Length: 154
Image (cartoon, rainbow, N blue to C red; front, top):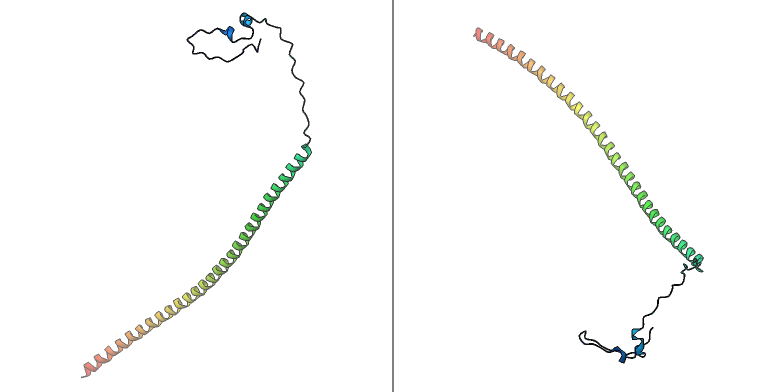
């Protein structure tokens, strides 16, 4: 039973209280309820209710996905354009460097040819020096011979 309490009360936990003063039916104080058989319980009949806005939600989600993929594609296209420009710049730089290398090789070949010509000139000059030494030796020997002849005749 419920609804039998007429007013509020407070307890400190040490005194006894007469509950009959607070109950509408004091005879109900010793009442012991009898247990009832519980009614047979069946699981509730549940079923899915379709979302009335499902088509609109799917369309909105698809549009958002399309917008996101378009942004991704735009970023990828920008990255591709930048990469293509970088490749073009590097190819131009490569051609410039290769042209400089070719020019340096041509200049090196010219210097090597010039070095070969200088080496040949040195070899010819050394040959002339040796020939001149030989002539000086022959002339010195002839002078010494003439001086000895003059010495012996004087």
